[in-house]
Image 1 (tube, rainbow, N blue to C red):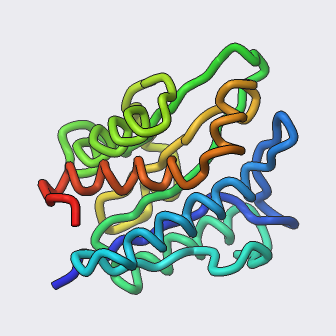
Image 2: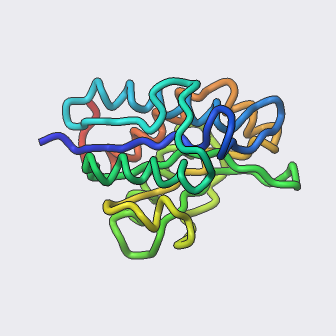
Image 3: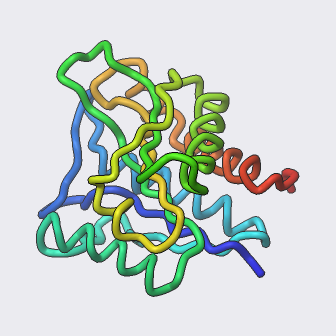
Length: 190
């Protein structure tokens, strides 16, 4: 039985719930691309089954911030997914702030352990700074999903070095997440 992975590409391309911007990049474009690459990788691995929240770069979910988030969670819950991975990019007023972090609802959970593996996979693959696994029980997609859920902040759009990695190697970020999944499940590479 294949493991069901729901990939949520954070934010909408336009309208409600658009993402951060920095260094000529829009969060919603980066998250779409990385999620699509991750789905392509997972679709080649018979151990996984995958669904995306946004199936085209122009797809808009919901009519408000709240309904956009609810739509993503409802898709994962009704499938039902075994794991939920929400993909985001970070931003900060201080352009020196950089790196990758992964958010979870609580410690000592499957989500937390998955987050550690995914974070490690990304950092090893693309060379971003390891900012650790962080708790944020207030995030809707972590609170309302009925399966282990993580929210991945790939890197900072507002940092020139991170932005270059996001621009030049979105596939590498997807590969890093996939490597983290393999490590978490103790699966050998295909």
